[in-house]
Image 1: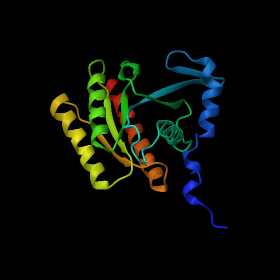
Image 2: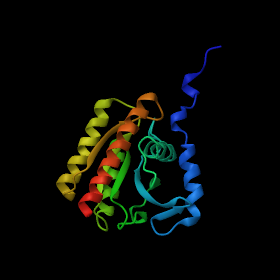
Image 3: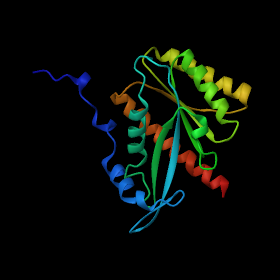
Image 4: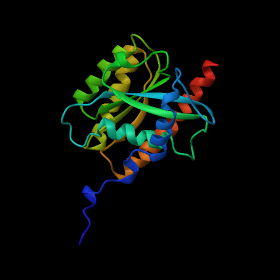
Length: 202
């Protein structure tokens, strides 16, 4: 019997068990952005993902899939800190992002013209109340060249009209082996940007 690989879930895209258990064990100790365990306080880094997804766009990564997978990457024991963990959440509303805690915002947009327009509109709304660093990750099937043009259009528009430098995170399809590599690189870049932001603030 031939295995249907197309319909076989990729384990790397399931929520990280250690991450889920860790958040569950410390959730009742929430104090601001600090959570405490029996071993001492744990700092929770809250990472907002601003969604700009065109309805019905083929091959687009679903928000909950990205949140689960990115949370797993950010909270890998080999990269994590015993005194901190990451909590990733997705929203379509810029006003749900706390300007005081948002050091970095990842924008997930469809690799299409409607997706670019929606992303620009929501980024513009966010910049009225907050000024975090922002990165853009495009999603959806189609030619790589089209995705590249969409990303360039969004990045150039934000720079020209909003005086905002968006960080390019590339393009990702729905769960696939190459998507795991893209997310691993994205998580590493986010950790570096977050650390740099903290150092600059201090």
